[in-house]
Structures are given as C-alpha cells and as structure tokens.
Length: 221
Image (cartoon, rainbow, N blue to C red):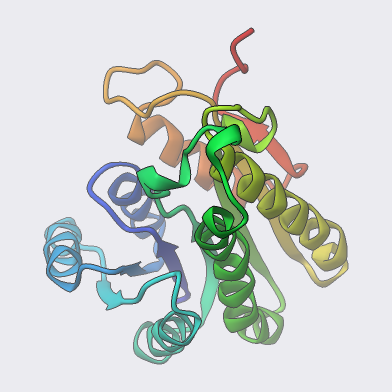
C-alpha cells in the first residue's frame, strides 16, 4: 500500500480528496497544524474503512513539515501522491498598494518554501517507487493576479512556476506534477467546484497524468 499525503487537511476539499484517494486503496496522511482536528478527520475516514493518520505540522515551519512527511512514510508506507492545498491566511490578501516587502514574506514561505520543502521530502521515496504524483491546488489569482489580493497573487504565481518546472523536469522519471486552478469558492452546491467534484478531478489528474494546468471551471471575465 502506498500513501496519499494531504497538506492542508480540513473538513471540506481535504476530507473529500482524502476519501477519494483512500477508497482507491491508498493510506492517507493528513497534515495540518491542528492535531485535534486531524484526529477527528482520521476517525471519520476510518469509519469508511480507510487507513488514515494525522501528522501535525505548520507549512511555515520547514522542519516540522519535513518531519511530518517522514513520519507519514514510516507509519503508513511510501508516499506516492502529494497534494499541496493549504488555505492561505486572510492577511495574505492586502491590496497591492498597501503591501510592503515584509508583507510578502509569509505568503512566499507558505506558497514557495512550503511546496519546495514538501517535494524535497517525498521525492526520494517516489524515485524509489519508480512513480509519483505531485498535485498543486491554487485559486484563480495564480494565473490572473488580483490587485486586492497581492500576497496570494505574487506567491501563487511563484508556486505555479515551481510546479511547472517540476512537471517538465520529473516527467522522464514517471513523476507527474499537475496544478488545479479553482477560480471561485468551493461550495457543496457548486456544479464544478463542490468538494466531491474537485476530489474526483484531482484523482483523475493523478490517474490520467495528462498535462500540467487544469481548471475546475473557466475563469470569469
């Protein structure tokens, strides 16, 4: 059994995606800051017959993230799929004219240093398996910067560049990097952006391994 590692585990998209990969036969490693929430999510997945375990870490703390992913691999089995989809903090979204250089430090750590740390932690295991998938989930500001959300616009664009480079560099090693852009809000009643629909899309990106950037729905005009 290989492991699906979810960075940014929560009760919406995170839980739906964990359930989708878990029902496909993968163990599930849930990673977020809140250990109590992780226990609740793991218990809910266990009721569905999914082997899941929580590993507390903060994506702004590279050492804790590396430790969590190492422990996940040792506890559950080698990580074949990594999904990086933590929810950005509200204070990352200041208007561009109110944004200082210091204001960009945390968003860039969140969306660049975090993914780089996570990928470096799981890549040796994927290479040993001879296969792997790296999934990056971003909002629409990753491809269309928004002047009222400067921090995420800058940081998501940098994360996108990193992920695309991985897509090209790792393809010869049978490791697929893909990005899913979700332009609007994730809502249970949304036709294209409900947690369950998005979870199926993310699983399909892993299974079909077709191209780099995908959209949950078209970007609004």
